[in-house]
Image (tube, rainbow, N blue to C red; front, side, top):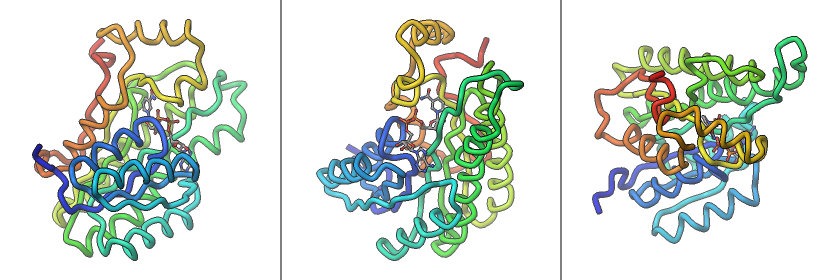
Length: 251
Ligand SMILES: NC(=O)c1ccc[n+]([C@@H]2O[C@H](COP(=O)([O-])OP(=O)(O)OC[C@H]3O[C@@H](n4cnc5c(N)ncnc54)[C@H](O)[C@@H]3O)[C@@H](O)[C@H]2O)c1
């Protein structure tokens, strides 16, 4: 099998679960050394062990992406261990509470914006100088279909994910000449703990039906797009927002 990321070093935040975990496994299968960065140490270390069975190097970095200091340390740890940073997937995210704007708690607003938007800014802020040292790189920010349309009772999530697309475009145009590409992915609803924690079976069925393909997506179906954006196959794709949504946004 062709290895698209042979010898590259990648940081993936939120890699202990769901889309981040599937991406970590696919990256390792494609020859990348992966820094599994997550707030969940136990699950994160289990992913590291799984990746090592693919014959690549992998370490766990404990990080709360809403802390600029943690994110800076995550990048330092990566450079100390691997000497360079080629790929960063800013994927860690939370759903936030489910409530109308008038009832939405300030605490949940602040936390959701801190992790889903500021956390990605911190990521780019520290990843970009490290990538410039190595002559370039590829950054992939995990947005959502809710970067393009609203979803009642999810104001903080929707606002953060819309903001992420703007941040992605700015990153792309500021560093294009220096060999860094920055893109965003917009998954539809994907079968991961993030969804399964918050919704019962009946709600999941209703949400699946909102997708023209009539089902939820799978983490691997998003990971394949992350891999393509991380690799040289997408060398002229920059500042883009690419959905992987079973047709959700085509409606
Ligand atoms: N599942 C979906 O339907 C869906 C749809 C669109 C976008 N997304 C986005 O994809 C990304 C991954 O989501 P998922 O569905 O795989 O969720 P998940 O809950 O399975 O995984 C999220 C991971 O992020 C980690 N995390 C949470 N807060 C963190 C923090 N402050 N610092 C570091 N790590 C933290 C968690 O420990 C977990 O390992 C998120 O940004 C999410 O918004 C998911």
